[in-house]
Length: 235
Image 1 (spheres, rainbow, N blue to C red):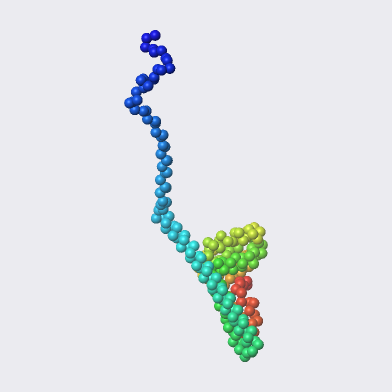
Image 2 (tube, one colour; image 1 turned 90 degrees about the horizontal axis):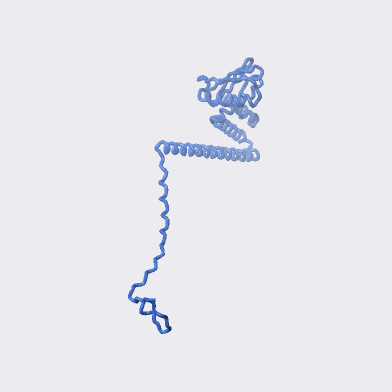
């Protein structure tokens, strides 16, 4: 039993402990680093062509909005002018009969000016041509074919309008659209076997002038309902 010492209550274990030995350090906790966020995406880049296209689109949108606002302002001013003249006419009828003729002349001249200005818008010119085509649809339906002569500037637009009109009216036929340099913008001539219709701005203005002359000469507003531009059948 060599190397062993019999245990007794007076045995001290301090002799076997090395108090000068440094204590073992506790391991420090490992702190994980916060994840680094990814870099922001680069700003979008556009080519010169894309920038030019966007600029052109914005310009066109602004031009259309400006034209619509200008047209609305003109219509509002025209309406106010008509209302003002109507009030003046009512006052003249009640108090100054001798000025009625002059007031009526102002009204009919204003009506002519409005008719001319409204008739000069491109969209309304095309609408009048389409209206003439619809009014003559019966003649086209009988023969199945017709030729629409228009100003060269309106050929493409009216070509796209004609087919839907015939389909909508249930006409099984065709209507060719021909560019005619001899026809003024907004005018048209529709020809089909057995008939023809002509839309002429000069004829419209002549009929307006005749109606205005009659109304001015009589001192009354009779005939004012005929101031709306339309088309006339040709013999």
